[in-house]
Length: 67
Image (cartoon, rainbow, N blue to C red; front, side):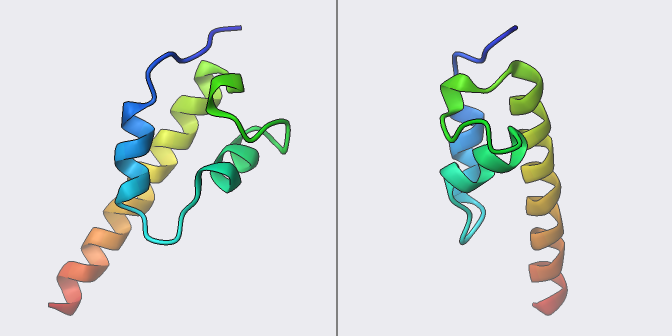
């Protein structure tokens, strides 16, 4: 099982998502197995980051349309 060693991408995205919290996201993408990034598989981590990017893009589009 591959694990991630650098969580910079996650924390960068987390700062951009108002109301999001680390533990909830990690639990969601590990099916409640853990709330620790270091215990996620590489696949779980990559899926979570992709979803965070998708949500961020939707928020950005929404904010742009309101301006």
